[in-house]
Length: 325
Image (cartoon, rainbow, N blue to C red):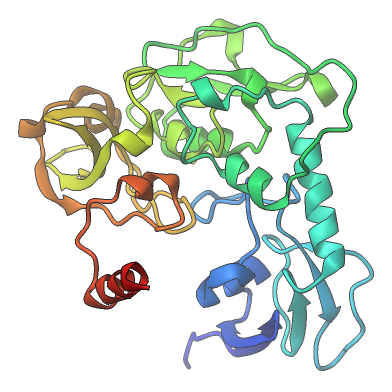
């Protein structure tokens, strides 16, 4: 007997696709790609238990299935709702979804400080993208923002709790990648915060990955702190022989200096293979790495403004025609 799951038909913003049973709406949309993919601030496909917390991926199910075509009465989180055969989903084509997403972004920005000019995450921050696409021009919030005392969690990772949106990604990453998690969410409500137990310093071979999974600037690399803006650096695919991880990374180079090392991320900002702290923090010389070539940067990214890949022939012709016009 075959173990293959039956394929189910689902239509998202008018685009039909067949996916295996058990696939979520979000992952079905990612198989199509483009603008129909809902944004996600807390879901991370490689971390078990993630998703369902930020509510930025809400969508409208206008048809439940072929067997039960009734629409779902409320918007549902696409990261935790599985598809059914014949389901029809509205994302960008639903004014209700766009209005709800705008409200979610407004809530996320209520306590988030406006320190993008000094934040190391600027230029690759998912909240910046979300705010630009769905945020309002002005805030209606008049109360004081919540603030937290800065604590030291170790020599490599800087915690800015004021920027945290409590997505829990770093908690899941530490739980699933390290031998012993020493940080988590303490307190409740608007007093909830990411912290270590009894001010214990974070330590572990794979703890640096909490930097990569953080969608905002709450967890940043101390070895890269204030050294450069990401759009002034050149990300390169590189690898080395490592006895702890795959050794496949992205090195961010300025001149002959390696300013930082990160995991290689896919189109949705998720790390392809988690890397160890030795590769991330200790190998900051070009001689430590075998450079494979420039890492592809999406043209919509601000990092792409410092573009250094050779343009494809069609793109070159398009640019030439635009100049002639």
